[in-house]
Image 1 (tube, rainbow, N blue to C red):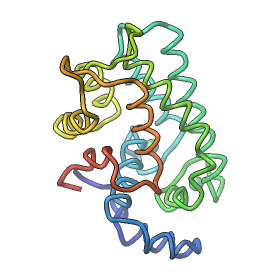
Image 2 (tube, rainbow, N blue to C red; image 1 turned 180 degrees about the vertical axis):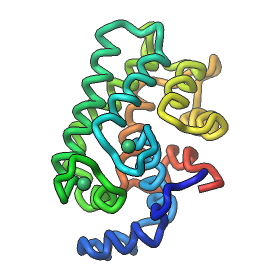
Image 3 (cartoon, rainbow, N blue to C red; image 1 turned 180 degrees about the horizontal axis):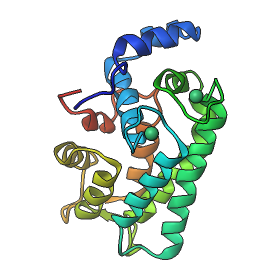
Image 4 (tube, rainbow, N blue to C red; image 1 turned 135 degrees about the vertical axis):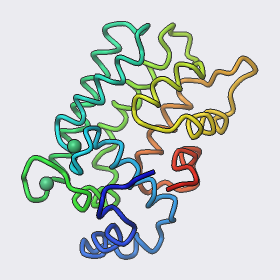
Amino acid sequence: MVWHSGVQSESLISALTESGGQRKVIGMQKTAINRVKLVFTLLDADGTGYLEAEDFDLMATRVVAASPDSGEAAKAAMISAFRRYWTTLAAELDTNRDNRISFEEYSACVLSPERFDEALTDFAEALGALGDPDGDGLIKRHDFMALMMAIGFQPANIDALFDAFGPSDDDQIAVPVWVAGIKDYYSPEKTGIPGDHLIGTTA
Ligand SMILES: [Ca+2]
Ligand SMILES: [Ca+2]
């Protein structure tokens, strides 16, 4: 895993301390900090080092393309959820109003995770629905893998996460299990969750 320059534990901690979040930093486990870093890196889909509207359009396109069997309504909901996620992040975190979010700006999300809850729920439910194109309420490992690779996770980590969700004998997981897992993953205050498998051993 290669991080953008400046995206290191030290910069996150100093940014949080400046924001008055020192107590949260102390209580934040290394896995949670690494997850915030990984989420930022993945959300920066075009690799500019900043989150911009284009990143969310790009990732929406990739994710929808990874779910060819899904219906048009489910795809449209996913695109709309990605856009809402961006507009919410931009409204809450673009402190210097330059229409992009630096990692330092992004790291402030750990101080007020509740502000992102609705946009995150939208996003998680849209992604969960894409993972279940036949609508039986279950997600096959193959579909899970395709979507998670489109977001940018590593295959071995994706398999480990799927296993951590406790798949059924026919290797499927329930949609609500994944929706809850997505919400936990993008909630920086959560620790010790199945999604920590996505950080892998290289982060
Ligand atoms: Ca970018
Ligand atoms: Ca900014």
